Length: 227
Length: 320
Image 1: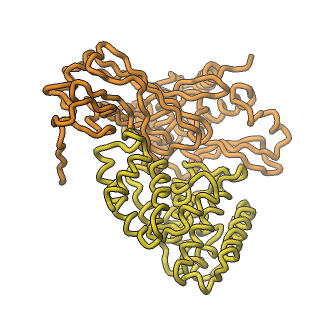
Image 2 (image 1 turned 120 degrees about the horizontal axis):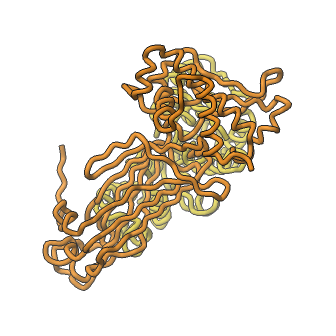
Image 3 (image 1 turned 180 degrees about the horizontal axis):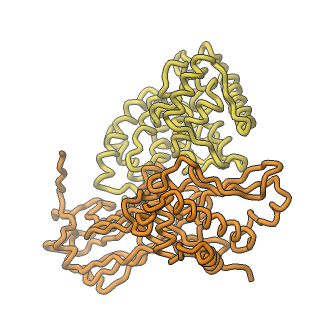
């Protein structure tokens, strides 16, 4: 699919306009995609027994990010849309989706007060963040992925997605998430933060993909060290 | 500014010289219809330890969206002995390796490509072959390739000052930066469906400054009209070489672009001929590439038209 791209300038204007009017200025070429995303979001709330009013309670918002993120990731992976890494790493694509296709969904999850979630800070654009979270956490199937990440938190998303540096080491990220799932939910936020800081330092000296025992062993040693 | 220091010996310029290491030129290519085609490295900038270039395709076919990218290189080591033991970066019975750490911040991806052959102290006059293949739709913008030496296997010496952990990076031999999304790597073509319009036309934005504005879809593009009755004759779904009509479209579009830049720039067209102060990736830079690298005769429109057709027919294979 030839994705439209929105500049930051245009995004700022579009956001202000949406804030005023609340109207979705849908590009007709994206109407099918919009329908699929809206359905996915509504199904997510139904499956989790959460409403727009209860989304901010406890861990509800994270669970929505998880499950909806997986559904969104699957929509974009289909033959119809075939979102590539090139597409997913283009911030303008996410600005366009957030402001011209499903701005109302972004609002339902995040409110209207935070432009970062729509366009302003690339890694904080909500749709972009949850897509990359799922991509970097992917465990081979929807079920395994959800099982691995359901007891994490929104802090996990930030820790994983924000630390892009010169690029994500995709297999490393997936192994980090897989081994994190061995920990109790209450420990995970702190453990993951420590592991990510340690990895940032250690990977400058030892290339994770060249370590003895491979990535799995490298990651195990990170977790063993922080405990 | 922070400085880092290493707790173990790492590669020095002196060591690099003593092992007589030589990294040959990088070759980039792609496959199209099961045939391999080379990409050109242009706009090269070299220093002793780094090299950067723009990837361009003389066939005007390659696109990082729809084609793969294959990168190859040969690395020669004359005598590896100095890397091992006293004064080296490894113990005598260690095994070292060469790998390429690739990263592309604009694609949000990084990884490693390993060269199969190990480096032991016995290695002498050996050529190491490197090859990396990336799928279509993966890379965007720049790719940085750092050729590194690393500890591949630890021997029996555990008490020396040398690195102990397998995977430790012991030095960077050189760095290469390849730019993907520049001039000539993809010809901007869009497909529309508009009744009562021609089969194709060239969009050339009135407001552009050819010496600065990019040779991208926003500024210049061939517009192909699916709604036209002759659209099937273009054979757009096949490879360009199987579409003589499309080659004619491309030739005509290129002619219009060169003529338009000549007209718009007037006397300043000399800057295009001499590559004087042209922005990388600009429309004028693209025209400079055509004139200087492909020797198109731009002073006479008929000769220019023939040169363009010759070039496209020869580089795209024509029709048998």
